[in-house]
Amino acid sequence: MSIDRRSFLRRATALAGGVGIGLGWQQALAKANRTGLRAQSVPSSTVGDPTMVSTWNHGMPANMAGFDALANGGSALDMIEAGARIVEADPTGQSVGLGGLPDRDGHVTLDACIMDHTQNAGSVCFVQNVAHPLSLARQVMENTPHVMLAGAGAEQYARELKMPATPLLTEASRKAWEQWQIESNYAPVINIENHDTIGLLALDDQGRLAGGCTTSGVAYKMHGRVGDSPIIGAGLYVDGTAGGATATGLGEAVMKTVGSFLVVELMRQGALAQEACEEAVHRIMKAMPVDDLQVGYLALGLDGSVGGHAIHSGFNYALHRPDASNAQKAIGQLIDASHG
Ligand code: SD4
Image (cartoon, rainbow, N blue to C red; front, side, top):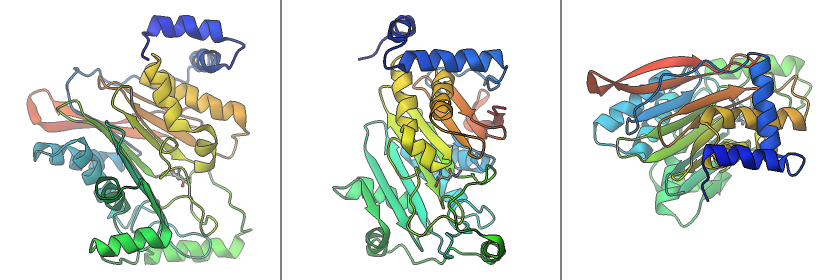
């Protein structure tokens, strides 16, 4: 059921003191307004414009690759996959694919998922030696009866698809791990700088929406740990009737609040993309201590509207739309979605 924004607000007021969906959302907004912490506004879009948003600085090359895929006749799913592959292949990024920081035992283990506007979804988790886990997730979505493959089973499927076994631990990441071992207390803690996963959302020129998320997860995690990034509804959610959302940061906090699903559900009920991200952040802040953890959400509406918000400062994302004077070309910018 979709309701307009005014009905949503009326319903939110009526619900105050009840389950609290609307109340929490209003409180989050009021607090953000009071403290002047709302993200800067993004340029408006024309309905029908393709749009791509991706987390962090590496969202810039990812979005460019996405628009190249679109220019070559690709769909929103192709935009997502093209963008993810650029970042997965970059050995200097220590949070995604090749060069990702390992777990505490020295293994690089990857999580990724993909989803489209028809709610088709594919996911792989705890995968080793696969250079492009998001492409593998897409294969799971398109060519198997399943949504999620894990560990050795996912690797076996990659080999069946002739994806080569690729060692992912670079010299730089091995050295960083050795350094970490000197002082390690072997507790799965997160540093608030330790979050650079790429989450991507794209709307193509036919209004199709898709999203993806790919990561090596939290550095020095326990062996076998899986984060939010491959979990449909946590690290990513896309619904062609409501919008899409993705998460970055400490996956445990995102999973406990089913963050990306929450963002999309709020958008379905009439919240703007920005408001929905703020409420999802607020849920985490209400539920647990957040001094040492960062989570950021990014959302894309069906009309190309964009929102982004995070618990702590430092969260940014790349936004690309077509150049008005040359529709084949995309113009992008980095948007600061800091809070605090
Ligand atoms: C995880 N959410 O594995 C991922 C890490 C991340 O930006 O997003 N880093 O918990």
